[in-house]
Amino acid sequence: MAFRLDLRGRAAKVFSAVGLAEHLLPPSLLNFSAGILAGAGINLLTSVATGPTTVSTNRIIVDSIVWVGAASFAAAAASIAESAERKADLVITERLRSDEKEAIHRNEAAQVATKFWILITFGIAAIVLATMLIPQI
Picture 1 (cartoon, one colour):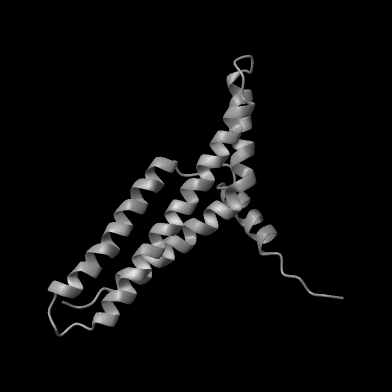
Picture 2 (cartoon, one colour):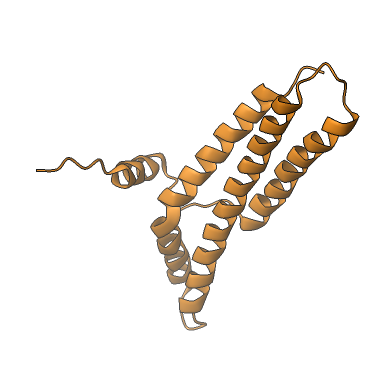
């Protein structure tokens, strides 16, 4: 008998209990955040050439990679949210009532909520780590 840990099932239950299972952040906000986070990482890389010599270049590079990693989590979450919206829009017709349209959107969001919120959690963790790694200049 093999032991299998089902994190998806447990995470889905947690997100349902908290009320996040049917709600996703807007893709435009996530894409904007991804651009800001990637810009922070790129700015750190450019500071390697112009920054003081007392700060370790390796620390700056690692911090930059973490910022860009946070950006990639935000971009991946935006892609998932856009995909869910696109699927819902393909099903919705003009004949449906507004409550039926909302139910379709909620259903599509619920199907991707676990993966979406896990990416958001990893992104927030990367932002916290990147902030803690900012070299003392």
